[in-house]
Amino acid sequence: MSDIMTNINLSSQSNLLEFDPYEYNLQDVANPELFREIYPYSEIPKIAYNHRHVPINMPEHIYITDTTFRDGQQSRSPYTAAQMIEIYKMLHRLSGEQGIIRQTEFFVYSPNDREALERCLELGYTFPEITTWIRASKQDFELVKNIGVRETGVLVSCSDYHIFNKMGLTRKQALDKYLGIVKDCIESGLRPRCHFEDITRADFYGFVIPFAIALRKLSEESGVPIKIRACDTMGFGVPYPGVALPRSVPGIIYGLQHYAGFTSDLIEWHGHNDFYKGVVNASTAWLYGAGAVNCSLLGIGERTGNVPLEAMVFEYASLKGSLDGMNPAVITEIADYIVTQTGYDLPPMTPFVGRNFNVTRAGIHADGLMKDEEIYNIFDTTALLNRPPLVAVSSVSGLAGIACWINNYYHLSEENAVTKKHPCVAEIKKWVDQEYANGRVTLISDEELDSLMRVYGKDVLSEAGVHHSHYHAEK
Image (cartoon, rainbow, N blue to C red; front, top):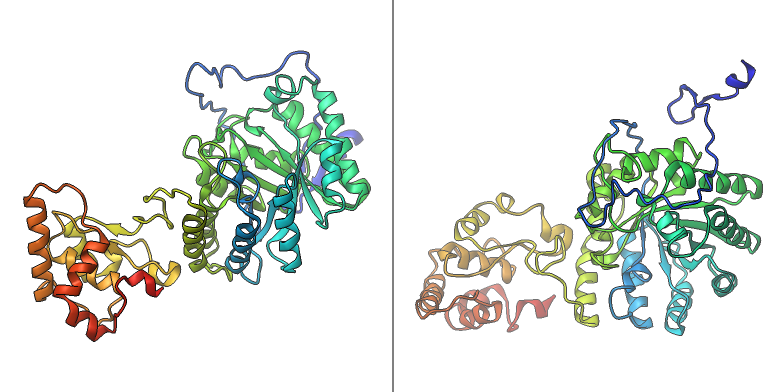
């Protein structure tokens, strides 16, 4: 009876007595567990249910961490040191005084990355805190131990796909190797952040939890906090309640807390978007107890990309009811900078940052937009993102679409705004109609419309004080 009673403890989270007689031990299997029924490879991966539901456990404080300079550089041309410094400065402004964007991580392998890291450290910003990332090797550890950061990520792949098929190790050998590097980090004064790569294809109770328990015990012995970043490397995570492990996002976060004893502030989620679940999986991780979600600006990352950082800024505000000091208008600056200064080809329909994200094309929609902006705009994009809603002029835009384009493109005040009855609108529509009567199939460009306004609407622009040949030059 006494042995059973030692497993009943008062939970600081639920404030209830909880009974759990299990402590999971490493299962050092002879053959890899590849979950072939779930991941047959020659077929679409399966979503299996066991109908086990875990409680929502939203932390009091949730944060965003950034991997733009690490995972975000793995699928594009590397940023220059100067570009990384400018982007880091904008991340700092976006984060706000409360540091909701808590950290950002850098590679340390090239002279360019090390220069950027050192120069960003010299800026002295508290947030985002600069951290690094290394593989679980002695050589990589030597690169970061004296570079001036307080925390480093350590790659600790946890699925048998990686342990057996990539590294050629047993689970016991992998665990011992990982623990050795983590101990090296602690001994040199660094906080380790363990990146559990490919967690959604890992044996959760046979390797993930026993490894996490070993890390927790090491943390308790050393007095140094150790974080776990749960990495959905292939985007296999599923947010639905009742899904079986290893694909269950709620189950993974709950298990790291309940079975391994990690508190929310020591758990991060890092997801990919291979199955279009990047954002919802990150939000689900928050809801079920992860203290941070790891993101990349514009979602740039391996294959289909990471969770877009800008998306989680708005998810944060939706869940918490406040931006808590974050400045979302900087998102527009960041996107413009990455596109214009690095040549990144940003898909125009990308939410919040794409050229067309708040552009309407249908004439009937433009008419509604003129009457009440809220009808066809997701929120006040002018105030929050410095992006006024626009219309694209085409064969179906009509007078209302052209008038709406004029008012929004030139930021005309209410007293200077034109209606669809204004003569310049009628003249421009005649020109547009003639273009399509002559066989045109493409949209009318902003530059074409601006030129037409210099002819037919010069009085409108003069009264509004618009003197430049292109509105965006004024921004």
